[in-house]
Image (cartoon, rainbow, N blue to C red; front, side, top):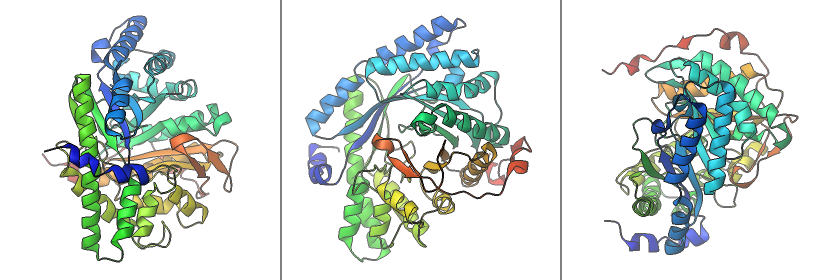
Length: 452
């Protein structure tokens, strides 16, 4: 049973070790807003979101005051907009992004996710039009996040969509070039996208979800880093048990907030996402956890094994602490949002290739990575294809959020601000993959997808 004692014992973690609730995200279905009249569609969507989430921010603030637990972000995810506005033109989708932006400003939330399309097996006209709208939509809004699912283990990889997303990322970077191409920080390309992820930029409200729901994302890399350091030079079994016990306590906090928020808002409680989500703050780093395990620097030999141990132990501890665990759940490795990762990149220990290897055992993928602004669309598509293939082959979620920073190259840094942090521009291979990317069609699903 959940009780107040479970929270009280975490006071030191909150005060000294950066423990927080990273996000309380309300998922909202927009299917009942669908209309052939674009103006009526826009009005219904604005009214549904602002009505459903009118108390989201105030309830989160009440919970912060009651329990003393910081809730860093209050967010909303919606039904993939390509499904809701399937008859819209690209300009119509841009207008709809503006409606979502207006709703975000009215409610005071940090982000709205779900400007999304699911094209793992092919694109409808609506999905294609939404994808075309992404660069302008993200460059003219501040609070809207976009995601495109280009692959799944069941469907294989839609390489036409992968090629297109390389071009879309380039266009988005150019349109936000005055701010270090920050539009790309709000755009993520997925394989096996989850329907209940509370984290941005990939949050959306899946078609199998209830009308409204509360999903919570916890954090706590700093807490785990301290526990690992204090465990000393123990053996691996003891180390894993240490992480499991801490993950249990962290997740109990998320379970409490999720249940309380859902009850006060009068909506169902969905899941707790027990991901370790770092920030640029000192001591709030996944890289530091790995280094406390005994690595001289994150990215050196042994890093993937250390991350595998961490991710597995977090999941095992977390699932014992919550009735419903979902979303991404594990350890995030976003370069710009993790001070230890930034330092490892600057020292040359952590390369794009090593990050790609690490994604085979962690929760997401190549995340918040700044690359030279003159990188070709084909090369970006090649990066996407490599990472997405890991997710498809391993029946797991993977994603790519890369930022070609216009006007900058290797040796420069990009500044994104806030939780998005800053990042050194990482070098890429100069050889072309354009002939490969241009073949078109789909890479077939792996044989182990045939489980029926």
